[in-house]
Image 1 (tube, chains in turn cyan, orange):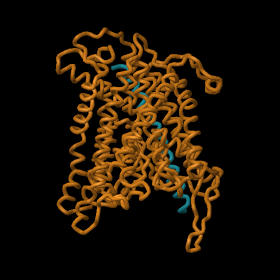
Image 2: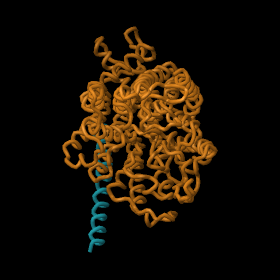
Image 3: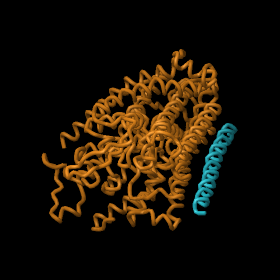
Image 4: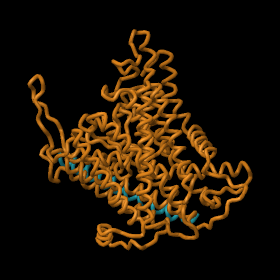
Amino acid sequence: MDRNNTNLAATMGDLIFVAVTLLFFVLSAGFIMALDRI
Amino acid sequence: MVQDITQFVLILAVMTGLVVVLGKWMTHLFTSPTHNIIERGTYGILGVNPAEGMSWSRYGMVLLLSNAAMMLLGYLMLRLQEYLPGDPLARGSQTPDLAFNTAASFVTNTNWQSYSGESSLSNFSQMAVITFLMMVSAATGVAAAGAFIRGLSRKNTADIGNYWVDFTRVTYRVFLPICFVMALIYVWQGMPQTLNADAIAATLEGAKQQLIIGPVASLESIKHIGTNGGGFFAMNAAHPFENPTPLTNTLHILSMLLIPSALTYVFGAMILRRRQGWAFFGAFLVMFLGFLVLVYGTEQAGNPLLTPLGVDQTQTALQAGGNMEGKELRFGIAQTSLFVTTTTAATTGSVDAMHSSLTPLGGLVPIAEMMLNNVFGGDGVGFINLVTYAILTVFLVGMMIGRTPEFLGKKVEAREMKYVMLAVLAHPFSILGFTALACLVPSTLESLANQGPHGFSEVLYAYTSGTANNGSAFAGLNANTTFFNTTIGLAMLIGRYLTLLPMLAVAGVLAAKKTIPEGPGTLSTATPLFTGLLVFVILVVGGLTFLPALALGPIVEHLMMLGGTTF
């Protein structure tokens, strides 16, 4: 049971941090486009 | 004292000589129209057209997306480490928050380490993740600087170069050959370079001791040439395997300064105004010397509270004197002070002493250098940061005398000033914002080894180091928590890209402008007067932005020490 919980927490952690990474770079790409319109 | 000053002068003289040698080579690299056979093969494999000229936005987008891909690859390998080959010590994978922090750290050229290298990473990870990201992140910074300089040197065009060409050339023609030679020298000096994970030594008492080893020399070479800073071992360059002799200590210092200083020559050569390059080199050097004098003076003076207790802190032939807490006896005060000043000036983050053990004013120096972020600065980005302030200086002076500011024969107008201000403001926004947030979080107290102003300095140092892409730690802060791993990870990403991208935009906008002839009202930017103005503006803007935070940390700690209280 504990092992399952650990695996679940790690998987959730992976999803969150991959999403955070992707979100940052997508926002940065948007930042480039916004800068280009100044 | 004379011996100390002599070694400062000698090292800085060698650095200045290397500026010309490497500067000429890098100028050729950024301007040569021909590609060698290895480069052409690489372009073929990558499927890129080396003849394509890129606008600043396309250049920035390619840089950003390639970095995103490398960061995700690094994250994946750190998470899967326990399943990957090559580790007889069976070290486990990093947790998700730590892997995020590590991947963000190394792709941004920061090299902040919330982990201990010898217990956390296999030799495979040290090579395939850490050393790889050290190489490509440094190449990214230098490539961006090449494009930035190219943009400033051109007129009436949107083309600032090709990212893949710059990146490939910098990797193949600068980093790989220099690192190869440096690694051989390091091996000669006694650094391990092996795929074995450990060695068993017999101690003098007869006990068995496990020594962690691995491909240290190859990592060390790019670590300093690339202004990266992440150590193979937790003790970083204070570990005898990472820094075995005074010669390696000196080579580390020279390596850190090599590319940031050479880029001033590249700049002068590419814009066909050599004096301009030397004027910027002078600005770097003036600030560097000021900080070196401060840290050396305070560390050599030692702790005044120890004198009444009968502690002899004077420098003699038999002892270094001063404040030797946290320093290596074999390096002493002078080499350590030079290393401290260099590693935070060049935003490397490698340490050969524990910065938390510096005197309060000595500890202020690395924080202040990272806050300014343009005292030589990291590979590529340090030079870009200096030009950011040069444009700001031109603008401020232009406003004072009522003329349209000009820089390198081009009018500086509202659009590029907006970009400059975004780049200037992103840096303190991240440092001060995240520091304030951490101070509000109750769990921060559990991570601190010290209370009072020293504890505050530990938090301030962490976010300053992360945002400035330095990576050194003050020590005393347990940063391996979900909160610190996430927020310092974000600080590193913000510090890297939200300052770099607006400045690429400046290069793009200036490249598209026509040049105008210099008139009697043109402010020359290649004179000692302008160098002085530039340093003044950097210090005033930095002081106005960060002095309140510094006052709460090292400054009040210094005053309290004079009053008899230490932390």
